[in-house]
Image 1 (cartoon, rainbow, N blue to C red):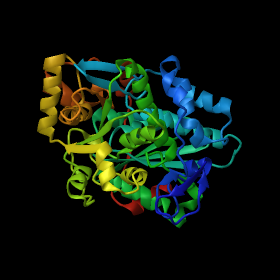
Image 2: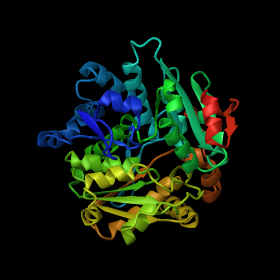
Image 3: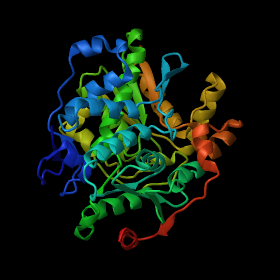
Image 4: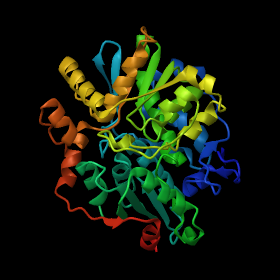
Length: 429
């Protein structure tokens, strides 16, 4: 499999090169040269397959022969060592819980898959290190820190916006030590992401062999397809149309969902549910893509003003807005609406949703009016404990602390504060 830049001004590369480079030389995101739909027998028998077997079938064409079959299967087994349950919230509405991994966020899947791929590519390169440089608006940092902790030949530098991630999220990315370092940026997520992108194109930093573990990296992004197949496996027996609502920030999850549909997964419609950072809802309404600086919200992992993965979605629809609208809707919600949704879900159904899931629920409920006989699935992307400062007062409850979170609460935060790109360069050396 070859990958090309969506800016169309860089050479095509292999899977390995795309993973290691992260971003193409022309600043473009990599995209696979072809997408071959899976055999119909795969979907007929999917309920009889393990999650590991499903994931192998889904990802194999994108890796090709660059990782041996048995090694790839082992990587997948280590990546998927936890559950992905669909939980019925109300009639025809399910939550797909993606937070049962080590850092209790959906990003555990992509981070674990990518770290193991990079570890394989570096296994015989004793003196050759890569530096993973990553920006986080919340959960990416913790998942990357956990996934890459102790991986041979990889240093990790995580940039996060000061005061704009939850306490638990911050502890997960600042307390591990070893090969993990955290930079606390005076700014918003978009400032962090801009610094990372600038660093990739800085010739003076070439010796660091920089790569990204944000969803701009194909090895972080492509495994996010797995969730949609797992949900289909669980709900196939209902024999109804499926509508997925993804709480959307950098648009990696919903972009992966659309890839899953291109592989043949029968998904009827997608909803990109956003907070007040509404670049994509405005685009669908007016046809004008006009990114704006991000605003801080209680669903902080979605505080993205210029979502990187949206260009991949446009590529899959050949930039045809009308075709895109047939498969895709997008709605935005305020913090007040989000809190009210959390309260309604809890009062009516006894289900504890965190802010991102609540935004997904709102978008799903709105879209289901158009699909009254379908099953609606909203993604619960992180455990409510990661947003206890929001969830507990909103629902008037006390959340028990899961063991995954307990392990970081007593550790000391270690971070370096920076304001400018030049300070990042100085830190990298």
